[in-house]
Image 1 (cartoon, protein in one colour):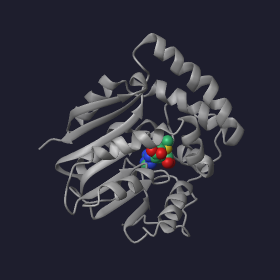
Image 2 (cartoon, protein in one colour):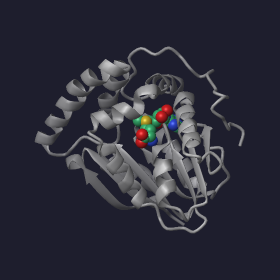
Image 3 (cartoon, protein in one colour):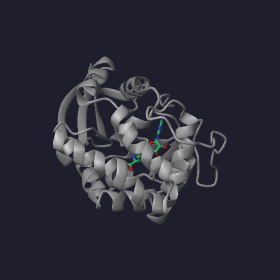
Length: 257
Ligand SMILES: C[S@@+](CC[C@H](N)C(=O)[O-])C[C@H]1O[C@@H](n2cnc3c(N)ncnc32)[C@H](O)[C@@H]1O
């Protein structure tokens, strides 16, 4: 695995100064730089801004990971690794846990957490893009991506990569924010995401990153479009679970063939 990193070996070269990011990400280097900047406060702000609901949602996501003795799980856009760590504590029959991300700073924190928990020998964190996964075909039983797909520049290229690295009939779990369907909830969502969240986040972290968040949700697929993109990439959707009146969803899909 060419791009393997350790906490002492960060790849900083892709960093760029960013201003306001466009809602639809156009440049992976800018996205990586933005997440590098928010990384130190990322976990704290996630818990604060979601009133700790993010833990509940991640637990739910992991509960949908299929039972597979000696299974292999890949978490894409792993950030500070919380999906991987949750999976490691709950899916103990799995023997291979891997997390990948484009942000070196996020991976540094994920590596540090693995060290604190004495898990470094059991998990592998690598710097790579969802659009170009450096794994052989059919490597994994389950691929997860939580609040990551929205940030990927070429989403369909990423979905095709997930299909390629999954074993036939393997499971893909996507967790993502969507605009709620009901007008009232969409208004409440807009108020929180566009006004309250950037204000609170701006006190602790990079405000621009948290104004990008609601704009990126708006520019992202709606659930129907995502289903279409999944189908074109070789997946069939099995189930969808909604939180926040449809503002956050988990989509479970199975690789065809
Ligand atoms: C909102 S965070 C989510 C982190 C984590 N999955 C979670 O649930 O907390 C989004 C992550 O996606 C990563 N990311 C964005 N584009 C990516 C890409 N093309 N390939 C891999 N990771 C990417 C970012 O670096 C960032 O760590």
